[in-house]
Length: 283
Image (tube, rainbow, N blue to C red; front, top):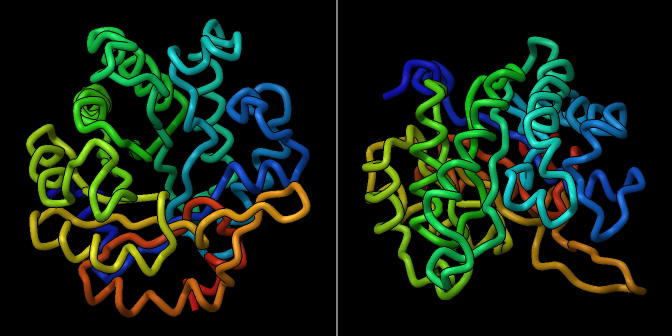
């Protein structure tokens, strides 16, 4: 087991952070606007989000770099800024952490499907390698590969991130009858991502926290690696033209004992969760 990861989980489960996108929207990010670019245009507001999670008790915070790979940024006209967006994203979180938390920088999917031929594997591998290196240069302590639906893309991301020498967390979304939308089971994902070199295996997004207990149990049974869980605050609902998540901090935190029993080593939140959710997890 990676020495940093081993040290982190030695005394029990570790609290990570919550959602970034919905928190940035609360600070003025418009729906459809590229959040990653805010690392360059609104770094103060990005840092506010990170600081709020540290204050709430997160011992690991992520970075505002989920969509900051060259392929995804090309759709918003910011591909030329890819290195600086990632360096600044990691640096902003590192500054906000202030020595009280570690930064596990976020690396998300390209938004293109390999299986559909929308993008070539070499291009994906290159984009992830470029992003991972920039995150390391920005001061990241580790890299979290998040919200992956396609196993091949997740494997490419793991290999690219591992090449930096940093610890790597690999997470997939099991939101289709307990499988990814491509049909991959938690057991298959755990085996393949461990073989690719991941140091931690996990799942995030897609479902409310109640759905993550069986997923966590399946992942834990399939690997000896630590398990990372980041659930949504329920499923999104449209209310008066705005997206809302209805799972309260207390409801969210009530699942912590079950997740720990199921084998979770790292617990945080994804879409719709807030610093209040993280504070309740800590309690």
